[in-house]
Amino acid sequence: MNGSPTGGDTTAPDGSWEELVTTALLGTDRRPPAGAAPGRAAPVALLDAAAVATVRRRAGLRPARAARRPERAPADPRPPLPARAAHRLSALLADRSGGGSGGRRGSSPDLMELLPQWLAAANAQGYAAPPQALPALLDAARGRTDLRPAALAFGGPRALWLARLNPDWRFALRAAPGGGATLPGPEDTEAVHRLWQEGLFAERAALLGALRARTPALGRELLASTWATERAEDRLMFLDSLRAGLSQADEPFLEQALGDRSRNVRATAAELLSALPGSALAARMAVRATACVALDRTGDAPAIVVEAPLECDGGMERDGVVAAPPAGRGERSWWLGQLVEAAPLGTWPGRLGGRTAEEIVALPVADGWQGELHAAWCRAAVRQRDAAWSRALLGSPSAPEAGGPGAVSLAERAKLLAALEPAERAAWVAGFIATHGLSEAFQLLGVCAVPWAPSLGQAVVDALNIARDAGSYPWSFSGVMGLAERCLDPADAVRLEALLAIPDEREDAAPGAGGYWAEAFQRLVTTLRLRAAMTRELAPSAPPAEQAEAAAQPPDAAG
Image (cartoon, rainbow, N blue to C red; front, side, top):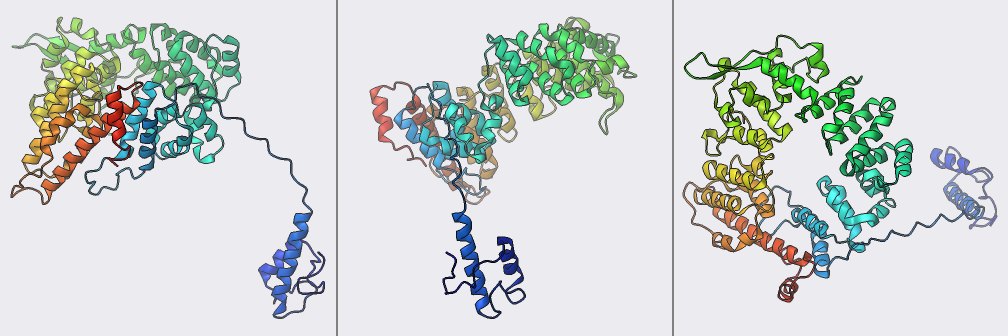
């Protein structure tokens, strides 16, 4: 051990490892190794010395204490996934292309776009994820934040167990309530209070959210017990959790929060109180708003007159009115909008002659205030989830420009639609598409329940067919076509088969449009059939005939 492989002991290290490293960095011409003559043999002598020093260092190491073995993966009590569904999951996870290149997609379904729907169906059935699929599932969720809630719910406790062993999957611990920790139930009072007093912020936020979902009063009382000692940013996050289970019982606590030191906390408290039509803040806002808006009967026909506030006093600011308007906005119109938005919508029929919401929005508004007033009513209808006012402000879907009096943008219409029941929502969007086509319908389709109602699905398919026959530029409808693949009822595949043929191209059509449309409809039909197969495979106990049909189709046949 003390000699050199080349004979002699001239290469035995006389100094420390650091000296050998220094010699290597400077070069043997400038600093020959100790005991070695300069020349061609010096580099070899340096390497020999390093080799001997390495062996000595390794031989001198004492074995370290073995690391503690990881705890066993927790059991998942949920029923196992059916074999055919497990094969389908493997195929969906293996397709990581995502179809997002922006080029021509062809007629093959985009399997990764079906994964969210598959996960939702599997979670609805209460299945446990196959252990061997968990790494690929976590990798998919790592790359797509929209997948994470459903993927982690499906992965269950074993996915969190794996995430603790791989830094690449730590997002799962951050996304899981309380970092994946088990939260005590509301009946375990001692454990609840201990976690609230001693837990990390994520654990406390998860605990408060869980309590508000099950026992709102207990969550509120827990927050009130430490409210004065919480940091401002934590108070804001905790206060936002009161949206779950919000009720009139929360009013005293929220009224107290109106005097908070943080402006953001005060604004959030005011917003929550204005969502409670019976709150004192809502009543104060109603008094202010009705002082600004009145019915004028002196003309030939009734009209609404508006007198915007002249100032924003301290009481208004305490109730959540922001005094400084954004750039380009007048102060008085800014204050008026906030007052009307926060006032209960039930205030206006009595103030405006006993009229219904529909009759009120049909009244003319003097002096150019209609846009501001109706836009504020739109925001109030969304905040208070008032279906009657949402319906009135939306107006008829076949109206010119498809807008109600206050629906000044597609985004606002989409928000108003969310207050309607799913069937009415689908019927309104179907009427919009029938009148105005698909060019502006994408946002509206996004708020409709899946699968789409038959009338809505028919309207979308008819509009796509009309666009194809008109020789429209096909790529402009790719977004709607993608939505149709995920949202149409799979039963619609049968009546779509007539659209698979390549149509005769018009002279004014986009070059190659006919082939694109045929591919797009082929992909749509294939995707719908694939979704139907997925549903059958996830069924708890499919009839023998359907099991045989599913078994006859390979899981990745459409990929």
